[in-house]
Length: 278
Image (tube, rainbow, N blue to C red):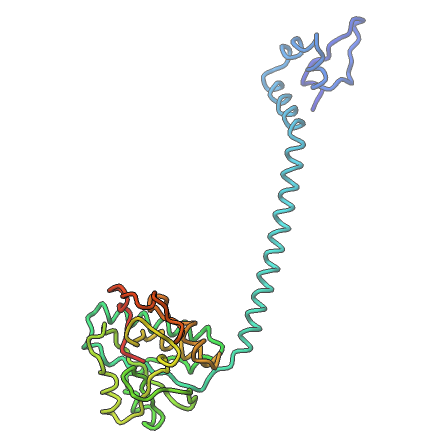
């Protein structure tokens, strides 16, 4: 700061002290008031600003340190994110698509109210999402207007329905399995089994009763059947596949381990997502 900020105060001998800084002169005891009075408003403002700047040195130093630490953490976070991305890519490279085909039969719209049709659409969206994440995804999901019997030979079709007397033991990856796209709240019992018989195609039910004790009828939502099949393709174990997918509200427990809680009556909300599909 220029020495003009404060006029030089002469000592007792009348000699000026040019080397004194404005701040020193401001704090010079007896000459303090005279110095301030002789300063202009602008000079006093500059002097105060300089004093504040000197007093805040430590604070500025601390802020710079915090800023450096923040940048360091951000760089580390980017490196970690990049590493996770590479890990996910490695995992995706290990995905082995299955040749098995899954079909959702969407020919039951006339048996459902609009609310249930919307529920079915949501279930199909979940199927699509789960298939993308699976280690052994089934063939790409497509929307086709043709009937599945026009696209696939009858001998390669198996309709999954809980009313079939046949129990599915293994999945044949050369086959195409049909899931009934019906949210029916148990109003149309046996309709998918009847349809399979009429069309002359094979039918079967998932081996749910061999591994699971349930509080309700063995009817699952479309996406649950879809996810169970994806889980079985990965684990090759029906029990693990069932219990990795079945919702808790179904009251499912391993067969032979049923307890009193499995006998409780389910709430009316339980069947909201049900579809006559497995």
